[in-house]
Length: 552
Image 1 (cartoon, rainbow, N blue to C red):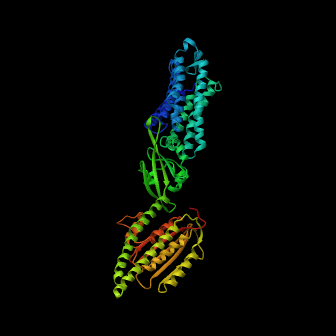
Image 2 (image 1 turned 90 degrees about the vertical axis):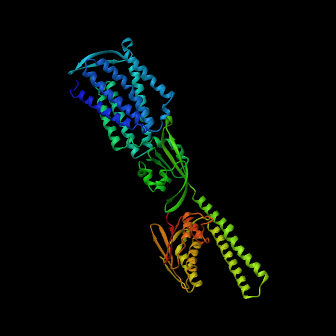
């Protein structure tokens, strides 16, 4: 018997479903939204025609119309799943044409059933409570259509189950909601069709009321029409090929839909936190890039250089759904280019000019060698030659420091004690203090000792006073060792620091020597950092190194 609440409930389902269909259509640019709108509209019309079939005096017409509309449900469902998962190319052209043949033929048979009886072998209008309903005996094509519809729905459900296995978080919740939205009414429909639910009324419409509620919750709480895995699926192949470099996939609105482990490290965010977030909030430098670009970014406390390539993701019919942002770490290459630029400047500019000084004074000495003035020229030659030799030694040390030597564990405290003792012996007038723990093991190579020795020598040499003061303070925290080398000299010229910060030299802007380059390269190549603070009261250089038990 039909309840008096059945017709109002079906009308409510039709109205609610139509509203959700309009809302989905307004978001049709989102993958899966357009077929979702068709699915919800078909389900709404199913409920409406079901209500009219028992509320009007023409149950045969409305039942036939309901059955025709029902053929849209499995097709729109399959299209929804294919587009939602990024496989809409599979459902185009000849494949789509083949899939719509059966619904068209079946609909034609429905309206011509009186001449062949293939859909209903027999039918009659019976009274159920206060309503007249159609009681029909299904025919061969009816069962064929049922098998076809359940097959399409099963195929879509299998794809969603695959998403459930491969993903987590928001995509898993979305896929679960979509599965519930189709499985519940189809199971109810199957139980009714095969006679497990008695009565003449098809309860599938009631099940669609529940499905509408599930989809509404998914839209409001699980961002069903904001974030989908379709764009991520399109980038899978390219992502797998670039796992060693950071790769980020964003949708057309700049929302992150996937990233690999290297990108998690770069953004300092886990995949669970990053997916669904705006790229501009996590990495503003990457948000507005297009094509190919070069950028610098901080990664694990280090300045890194990246070649960035931005590729568009195209859906069917040429619609752009997102971008793949791949970053190739070219830090070592960039630093090598910096070294070559500086070496070129040294040999082409500094050494040439200094040797010109040597030659000029040598020409003067060739004619006069007796007077004090001439001896002064000779002294100038010696001093200049010593400068050239000293610079050459630094260049040699620099070459050794950037060689591909394996990193090792070093006792930084022992190195500092040895360097401080040597500096005191060579400079008795200088005040050199060392404050450090008993032991501190860091990750590095012999170039670290060379860099710290250069910092200590610079602090004493450029003090411009006979009794300079140099302080070495070593602190340890958060898996890092921080060494501060402070002096009371005039400070490092601003031009020197600007050149180091820019990472390159020009004929007009270059450092006066190689000492600070040596320090920077030696520390950065072992995963450390160098920071300079200079002023009228002196300079503090802070060297940060990884502890021996920490990971890069």
